[in-house]
Amino acid sequence: MSENGESNGPDLSAGVPVETLRDGEPLLGHVRGEPVVLVKRGGDLSAVGATCTHYGGPLAEGLVVENTIRCPWHHACFDLRTGEAIGAPALEDLPCYQVNTGDGRARVGDKRARSRRRLAGAPPASIVVLGAGGAGAAAVEMLRREGYEGPLTLVGAEPPGPVDRPTLSKEYLAGTASEDAVPLRPASFYQELGVTMMIGAPATALDTARRRVSFADGRTLDYGALLLATGAEPLRLQVPGADLPHVHVLRSLADARAIAGRTGGARRAAVIGSSFIGLEVAASLRQRGLEVDVISRDGLPLQRILGEALGRFVKRVHEEHGVRFHLPASPRAIRPDRVDLDNGEVVQADLVVTGVSVRPRTGLAEAAGLQMAEGGVVVDSLMQTSAPGVFAAGDIARYPEVRLGEPVRIEHWVVAERQGQAAARAMLGVGRPFRDVPFFWSAHYDVSLSYMGHAGRWDRIEVLGALEARDAAVAFRRGGVAIAVVTVGRDRLGLEIEAAMERDDRAAVDALLRDASPA
Image 1 (cartoon, helix red, strand yellow):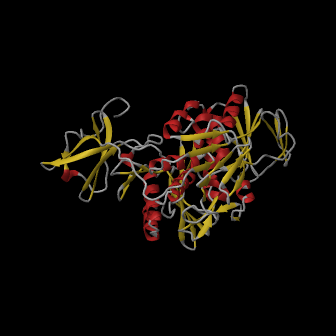
Image 2 (spheres, rainbow, N blue to C red; image 1 turned 30 degrees about the vertical axis):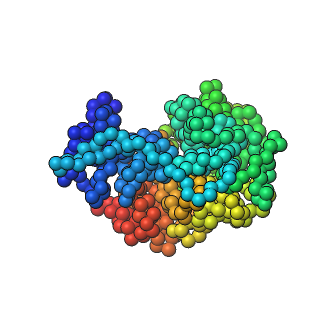
């Protein structure tokens, strides 16, 4: 249904001619007032809800890949045969409908009942998930979805438990989403799922030989299998005044609540750091009406991650919305009403938010003797660590990225969720090697960047299309291979490139990029 209440597309319960359906192209219609997409794949017909269960993206504009449909906004993946949410960031299934054919017409009928999986073999006697971020929350849901019925405990250091972390720096901090929108699930959801929640009591020791976790409050938990998903923590500035009450970091709901609470009496904000989180905070504070200055030691925002062209583009987008940049510069001291910079400038500010970097929380893993490398916990393709029965996912996991042919550690929300899902399946003996293409998105006012692949380093960057028109693809190449692509205003292309990368079809990626070039 459209916003004005009018139906979009045909009434699929009345049917449409099968011959009018194009293979692999979703047809948007409705059934008893609910939006539905009907999809033909060879000789098969499927019908599922048309609205992504993540942020409400239009699946009719998405991409069909074999038996899946992917959302154009944030690349959530659903099984067309069952409606199941099989790839984060969506965690909730789509409604799935019966499809009947007769007289050359495809008619969508009633919703199908959900089938419950049953595990074969002997699952772990109990499972403990340390970390209630994206990876941990996605893992416990997948464990129950796959049929695990044993004791399951989710441990989180920060109340209220799992939250939609991307919302904190975007909609919530901008004031366009209430606090009710921040938790990933209500507390009752985990109760109904049979998950024991331990929030606020951090783990202090991991004994992999005895399969036991100890906690700060003296409790211990034995486990049959364990997932380490402890995430990362923001680094604190080491300058005079960094501990003043108007200076904040942003990682948790409590952090976001504190920043939002300060905005009512603040007029000017200084954001220290031009990372994604810093720039998203800058955009949100501008939406609240504050004057915003961004201070960064980088010559351009995001240049080390996205290169010069995208860095200049993002900087212009923010400048168009009134943000002032001080580049390159670093804070020398923070005062109650200003920030003194090392280049002699003084930035007036009664609110300061720092987003300089984060550090993976690996102390528990290191003390337990797990194999480490370059700041991360080493895992194999099933997310298994060097200790039997111990898995790791998310910001701390250094995993083999098959397309690059090298291990990487990636701090992306969707990657963390999907790794948590992969680890959950592996714990139950139904896993497969983790091959998902790294993906993240970043929103800056009305501009959204979608990033597919991973480019820690590159030889060359190609800009295809027009960034200023907000209609472009940017390819990062190493040895001639497009190892990562950023799209602006080209959601469909982003999905197609991700699917080609998923197949490791480099020729298809290049062909898509050629088509993205101006004629």
